[in-house]
Length: 322
Image 1 (tube, one colour):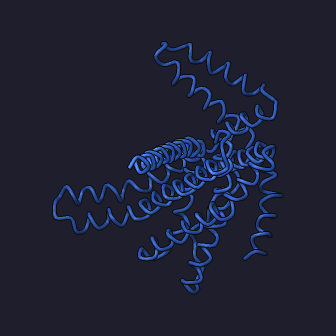
Image 2: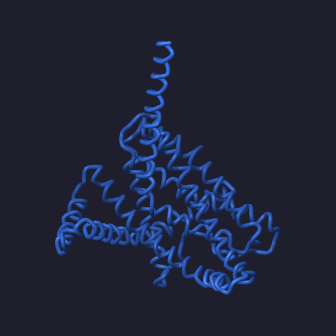
Image 3: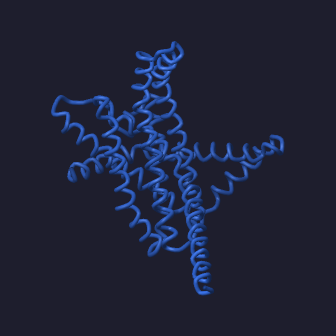
């Protein structure tokens, strides 16, 4: 009997350790996922463009196909690569993180330039459809979306990997896997809601039994274009902020602390212009604004390189793999 009680006690101890590990993984995954906010918002803003022009009945199946491709990108390809880097070449994480941050800055700056009348914009398809087989068009759009997702997923996984504190192999693997699944569900769940919101609004407006219901439906339909525009603005601002922050932090990790110290000192000075209760929020806002300005400046400088060199090279590689 005592042996059985001892065994049960050991099992309970193991269960507590396992539960604590799950809590640690979940906590680390939440923190790591928050670091990838810029890429996540951009992903949610860009993906609905791939669904323009398709029949409403095909929208959710297409979202599911892209989401499944995104999970494969993260779990089958990027997760093992990230773990291998962490185990065998951790010195490469900071340069790769800077590369991802530079890409975010480039995308954000190019969108700003497009709004100001320069260039042709970037970050998704134009929504146009040539005449042809709808099945073939869908296949091409899905493939294009998954290729774009691979870049964004690489950014997300690299940012998450850098945000995970030193731990065991399985802790890192579990955290990255949870980030991959959680962000994919959040992004494509949001995309599904966005692309079907106008259909829901139209249904309520046409078939609602109450005047309030019909008014709600009309309000949803009218609000969606503005919502999508607002999402794009927020996504662009988040890309510039996160991209600039990544560059500053990665430079500090590589030994150059100057930019980080300058931004911190000015943020603290700005915070002291307000009451003590607002110091934390004011310092965060000032730091985010300075990171965003730095991201915009760097991204603007990278536009010629991205448009003239990287873009055409990527197009050639994509055409070969098609």
